[in-house]
Each structure stands twice: as structure tokens, then as C-alpha cells.
Image 1: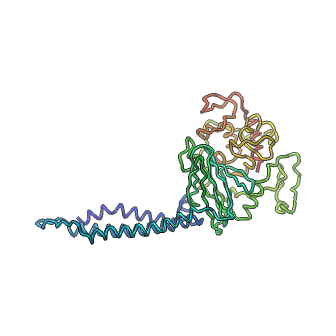
Image 2: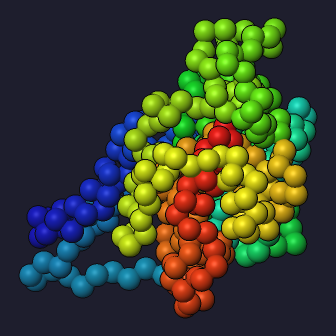
Image 3: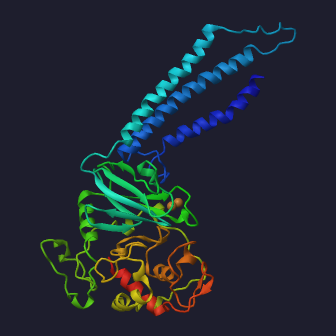
Length: 418
Ligand code: CUA
């Protein structure tokens, strides 16, 4: 009999052990874990969680011990007397009402305190980042800095960032697990989420997700967050706020050295633009878990030779217009490109991912994406641009659109927008 009871308690004990192990996991073994102390937000959530696990463990052990003891001690024995029934024992009833009430108070006080701490308005001096959910990508706007970007968000360590959450269409939910918190983007309502990345954090890259089902490509709506040092952030922000300078003929043969870009003195000449580029999280330092792994679906091709010969000027002046790109995408610095239906592409080449974080940002992927976005990302509202491509939503073959050479020109142009 005792053996049987122990065996049935084993699964519960095992899950408790698993929970305790999980709560001790670090940043590296489980890259999307929420048990981190990277921000004030997740530190207080984790403290609350640990406290609940502590009290829960005590309750579990005491209740199970009492149960096992009672079952063994008072089990039915051959020839034993019938059990004595008790009713209306006031002392017992008060005790088993009071104990859970005390436990609930011990849980409620820190819970309510944490709710008030994390839900109050962001402290003054926070960095505002407006987050706009779209089917299926993220728009990030820094109103104080004049920056509009997509899918990749930079924040400086040591400064509170206040996310202002709205949606352009349906419900979405903003979640960067390792930073803590998860909050919905709701129509006709503005939500807020703020936290302060610890100033001891090294410059790092994190994954974020949409966690509210929002349609065909809900799972393809991802975020990369970069927590960077304040000077790196300042450099990134300064550059992102500048218009896309595109003037190949004006590019100097040697780099321009000015007081504002002394680092350019030994840097190799950029033959496309004369603009000093700002900080970008180094591609070679991206941890493996933030690098997109989605394979590109078969059937859409790109031509390496054509891509190598892509003409950025032709891409800007012809391809971007002929392909209809200008109807949806803004590029600050390209006359007429002001639409905000699709992601702002002003500095698209400085991003490591495209298509809502689904794919790597490189020439062959960009070319395939432009050619047939809907084949690469189900439900995408981006038109099928490649001439001769089958559009899986319209169920027709595109007869206008761009050929491979014209797409190569557009890719060359986009990749020049660092
Ligand atoms: Cu957006 Cu799910």
C-alpha cells in the first residue's frame, strides 16, 4: 500500500523538480526563456514567480505528507472498527479556512504590488518607441528621433524604453520573452509596455514574436531587438534619422574625413554613397538563435550573375517605379516614395532580416521576395512583382511586372540603402 501511494506521487514530484530546474536556467541554454534578469521588468516578475513557487512547494509538501500519512495510518484493517464520523467541528473548520486565507494573502500582496509597479506610467525621460502591428510585420517609430523602421528595434541599455502599442488592422501581441512582458495591440486603444534593459548588458540581440493569432502568417511576424550601448544607439539613431543618400556619381574616390566621422579615415571607400554609416549590430556577432532559419520555398529562382550586375541607379529611377514599389513603401530621400502601407525602406540594407524577420536580408533572398512574396510568406499583401510568376492569392500569372534584370536593379538599389 505505501509503495503504491509513492508511485502515484512520482509524476507530481517530477514536474516540481522540472519547474525548479527551469527556473534556474540561464541566458544561453534556453535563448527564448523568460527566466532572465535582463530588465527591471523581468527581474520583478521572476522574483514574484520564485515566491509563488516557494509557497506553492511548501503547500504541496505539507498537503501531500498529510495525505500520505492519513491514508496509511487510517486505512481499513481487517476486523477494524467502523470510522468515526465528525460533523460541525468548529475548530477544524476555522483552521482549514484560515490557513488558505493566509496563503492567499501571502500571494496577493506581492502580486498586486508587482502589478502596480509594472503597470504604472513609464518614468519621465523614457525613450518612446511606437509599435504598430501590421499583418504581418512590425512598424517601429521613434517620434523624438524622427526614425521609422520595421521589424528590428534598437534600444540603449540603461534607459527605460516605453513601447506605445497600437495596431493598423487586427489584434496582435508584442512579446520579447527575454526582456519580459507581453502586451496586446488592440484596435481603438493604446497599450503601453515599458522596461529598462540593465546597464550591465553587453550589446545583444533578442527574438520577439507576435503572440496573438492574427491570420495566415501570424507565426511569420517576428521581431529582432538589439540592446546596445548608449553611444552605439546614438550612432545608429543619427544615421537612421538621415535620409537615404543615393547619388553614385557624386561618390568621392577617397573617403571624406570630417570632424563628425573621424573613424572614416582608414575605412575602405564606399563607392555608393558619401554618407558615413551609423552603428549596426555586427552581423557576425548575431547569436545563432536570432538568425532566420526558414528555408526559402522551392520554385522561385534568382540569377547570381544578374544580381552581380544590378544597377542601383536604374533600380531607383526605373525599377522602383515600374514595379509599383513606390505605391506601398516610403524611402526618405527618394522623391515620391512616401506611402506607409508597407515597411519603410529608408535604411533597409542596415537590417539583418526581411519579411517580418522571416528571412535573411541578402541579394538572392530579396530578389526572390520581390519576385513572389506571397509564395515566400502565406497571405502577404505585397503584390507578386515577377513577370511570369504565379500569384497564389490572385490565382493568375503576372504578365506585367519586372523581369529578372529589373529585379536585380531594384535589389542593388535596396542593398545600397545602408
Ligand atoms: Cu500578429 Cu499574430
